[in-house]
Length: 214
Image (cartoon, rainbow, N blue to C red):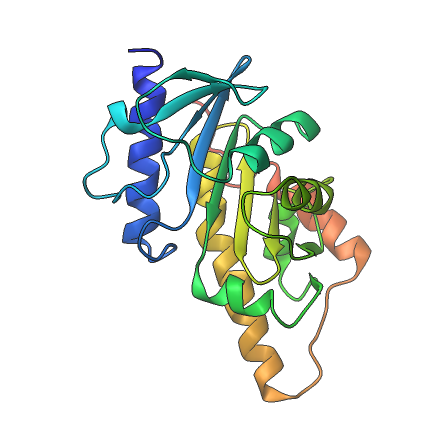
């Protein structure tokens, strides 16, 4: 079986999203790029019963390479992201706060320094029907210079140089969205960080969590 480890990583990541309440049912999808191949979760398969063999492989043109099931309907979106960024992994979810916030804003302002983890202001891609080329184009634009974005009337997406780094951003994005929603609900003015403060946080985040070598 091609890419057995990567296919299992996709399964494990889907299970993580389910445990963290980042998806509902079989909503959401996960992929990894290896060269000209995209290893992506299948369409409509229960995460609790999904196996590595269920995960499918396509090429960057969307052609089937291996796997007996249909790929996620968002395969065009994943391919478009890989074509327009240097990402190696993509995670997409339908969590409550990020989906709700995407209904009422066109971007998430820098109300928390965690915005620096995503490159600054987090954009909301305009609505387009799931699985369409229009959605792929809209989301790719929203991700320019960013590691995460919201999708209006849909959900959220994060990208990264590894699958772990991509999926680890999802709970953080959900937290940022939850904070923003609760702040907006008060009706009071929301304190925002300035461009210099975010740039400083971006620099600081580069070494965040790194410990000296033993």
